[in-house]
Image 1 (tube, protein in one colour):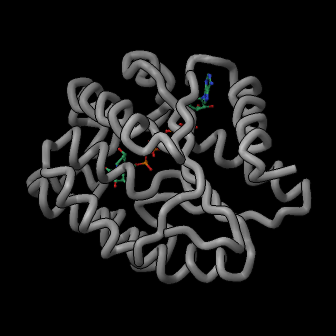
Image 2 (cartoon, protein in one colour; image 1 turned 90 degrees about the horizontal axis):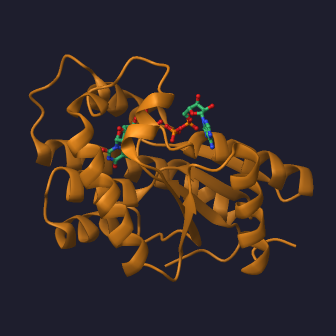
Image 3 (tube, helix red, strand yellow; image 1 turned 135 degrees about the vertical axis):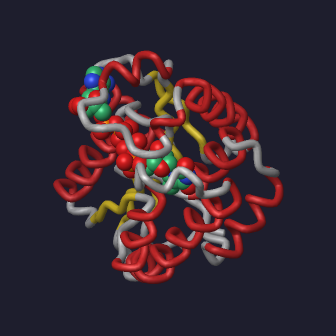
Length: 209
Ligand code: ADP
Ligand code: TYD
């Protein structure tokens, strides 16, 4: 289900692919056009979701089991959807999300090997069935992405390159399965050319003028 008033645009990909950079640039672009837009990021974005984020990314909590991880990621998303995303969309404000439910499908499904169909159902429950209008998957080799990292690794990044490779493959499968909303973008290109490709795609799909 999608809400017709505001656009819901999501960015996905492995850690360090350039999602946050592009999400911010798109929000600025939309606001300059006069199409009011806000950005949200996951896990987090509300008081409760940020508390959940602290647990999820804490380097000292290595013993979280995969199912708890999936439930906490999805719990954080549920609160964000209820408190921020749905009310903004209903007011006609565009929402640009740095990660949404595809991250759980890719990381906890592909990465941690939990049952994908079950995670899809769980996420529909958590998000009141809210689908993105369009999802930009910024695809990059995990070795390249790792070279870009300038901050200390969080608990999930520390799980290593094998997990990132499985997550990337999962995104490639999701892009095929949900091809009506997915747009795959080559993350090796320059920041400016990726931004231009995103704007072109939005125009071609008549999402912006
Ligand atoms: P993510 O949100 O996917 O983890 P970021 O947008 O934070 O990624 O980018 C990670 C780092 O890579 C940042 O230092 C950013 O400036 C840089 N970066 C982002 N996009 C590109 C690009 N296309 N080419 C080179 N470096 C990039
Ligand atoms: P973050 O610092 O936001 O990373 P990034 O800038 O790459 O988005 O950390 C989020 C981490 O949590 C990242 O490793 C991806 C992971 N994650 C999941 O495993 N499942 C999820 O559902 C979400 C939203 C994130």
